[in-house]
Amino acid sequence: MTVSAQEASRIPPIGGRSLIRGSAGRSVARLRTSAPALLAGEAVVSFLAALVLPLMARGFQMDPLNRIAQVSGLAAVQLRFAVIGFLLLGVVVLAMRFRSGRHFGLASRFSSAAIAGLASGFVAAGAVIALLGTPWPMFGMNGDSQRIVEWAHAVVNGQPSGSPVYPPAPLYTLGFYAELFRGGNTAYAFKDLQIFGAAAFGPLVYLSWRMLLSPVRALAFGVLPAFALIDAYKPYSQTVLVVLVPVLVAVVVHLRRSGTDGWRLLLLKAGGFGALLGLMFLTYSGWFLWSALGVLVAALMYFPWHEDRRKGLAYLGTTGAAFLLVCGSYLVTMLTEAPDTKDSNFRFDNFTDPAYFLMWRTDMPGKVGDWPIPGEFGGMDLFAVVMFVALGAALWLGIRKPVIVTISCMFASAWVMRMFIASHMYETQTVQLYTRTNNQLLYCGLLLCALLAHLVSLRLAERRRAAETAGTAGTAGTALPGPQAAVIGTLFALLFLFGTVSSSMADRYMPAKEDTYRILPWVSHTMQNLDGTCPKFAPGGQCSKTGDQSWLSMIK
Image: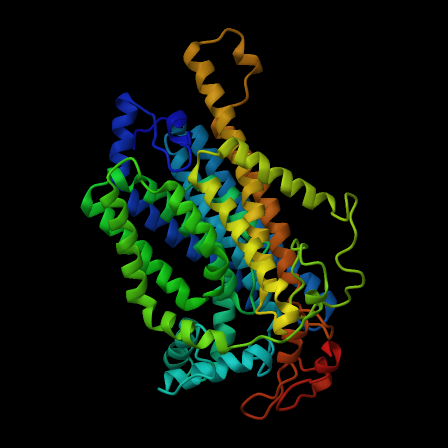
């Protein structure tokens, strides 16, 4: 590769094309011919990195029910995360200084992919620590774990699951994984998939945002906001949300370009997007309901009305056909069965202000008190004010960019659906999971805050290039450092951000007998193993066939 350091580190706008010309432009053109191979390399690096910390955590010798042991375990994972992260950062620094930075772009690309994997691997390692000594998944055979385990066992044996509207992909995945690796034991297999699912979160989000952003920007502006939602209990639902948003944005971006695309490329892209959306719908369909109205508005805005409309229609038609081919039968089931499926389980947050969405305390919120806590500005806290200001500023600077407009539309769509369902709550005496829109509203809001920083950085980069082109006198001492320094600074900060966030999200699964997510692994340590023995760290050496049921009194 002969791309110069400066050229390799320049980052094009969202969905844009490089403006590099001349010999460097020819080098970049040659590099693009291997872009699929490079992206495949990023995927391999990211997924392998996601497994490193969980594999290391398997060898820890500690009692996961002891709080000192939990803190020590988190520190041990953090130490390994930091050492590996600093080694990756060192590779990027060496690449900047070696051979005039010729390989800087390649080093930063693979380091970004690795950090995304390491970050979610941290959370997965926390799940490994929490479940040391027990073969059961979080919550053992209780609640959602029990239903998922039993339904997966049923469908893999050709029997109907307990709910026709429950997404089938997780059930079939669990069932077939259990047949291949766990002798058909879907309960023990679910523990494996909870850990693998948490580990895969970072790589999947990173690769989704790579359809829209360069490596470092995908890590900073796409992956980092997603870590507010990472979940090791039922990882597939949150993973679908954080992947669905960039995929739907990419669908709109390519719809905008469809009027000038060649027919073959257009149909291939549309078919791929449709199949991917269908697979996600089979995995968790709720986010599609919250997003549908906003995506429809964005699609109408960016339809190629002034170009070849036939191509726009063909793009949408092919995407829809591929989607139906993958999940059409389940969609029909949803449309026919879902109206009769009522959710009348009123949780604590169904009794609070419906306009508050900035935190989801889950079905086991712990000691809540006055919630939400009144803030400084009209009952809102500073975080809410900053987020709404960032939403407006992002639209101001990015009003012509499909990524900003589409995410804004998805935010508004989730808000409208939330209020529509909540407004009928008294009449129907059902909640229909409307509080789950918290996650989509929060994620879209965090994305727009992050993308605002992206837009500002693009403006600064444009000014720097303009100054370099004009040869402005005196800019050497006053201009911002080059983009390579920005990449190194960003990666350095992201290491600490991801390390802190991942540790916090891993800590919430450390076993404890309290009405929070910590009760989930606690119960796993109190359930009798299938061979009649107790888990290694069962409290007081005591266990039962159903596990500690005292948590029932906590949530009543």
